[in-house]
Image (cartoon, rainbow, N blue to C red):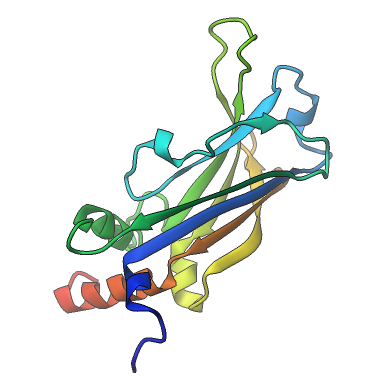
Length: 183
């Protein structure tokens, strides 16, 4: 069966962080030390500083979205980005430490006028499963994923609207894994 995708799509992955919404139960809303938030994520073994929204935005009121509209496209072609492609393949393996998920972290950013020594603090985490994208054969587009409180991962404190376009790349990697006999 011929692929319906542009061949270039099999060599790239695009991640968009659209907006963040906190619900009334989010403890961070009552924390006066938290003034601004940014979103970071772990992906393809890339330096974390390269994978965060380029700016922090003021902490929103409950149920009011704060919009980042931050998109980054990663090349995962075999020729020039072999390591990234291998990383993508490893996410599909049963022993992947993140269980085939991209972890998004909502982080509080101390403002410049805060006392010295105040550190960034993780507030919540959200996940997108690349394994699920491959199984359902559907990219994640404009989807609200639940943000879990880092102090109690049972508590949902809001949603993060994200897009992860990687199905053609995942299908290509899966095919290569079957050929190489590593799957």
